[in-house]
Image 1: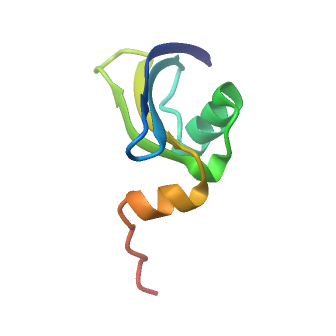
Image 2: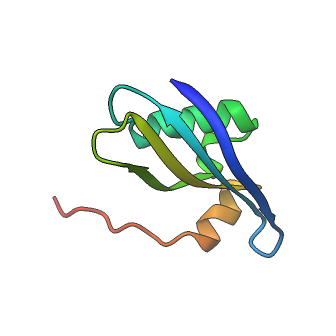
Length: 88
């Protein structure tokens, strides 16, 4: 997968870095793959990364990804909305 950074801004109010980058891939990358790649490229903890959006145009192999990289897992847990668990 080819990685290209588009935009990076620092948000001190929420203690996070907001990044936008593009990835060229033959198939849609999963959230886990994107988290691992973001962790490697920005030298951060996987648990402190929140993937907001993976977007592609129809027929294109280039995906635009919006992600938030927090300073810690605790900062992420305070700010990011909670996901409901599925009933068993």
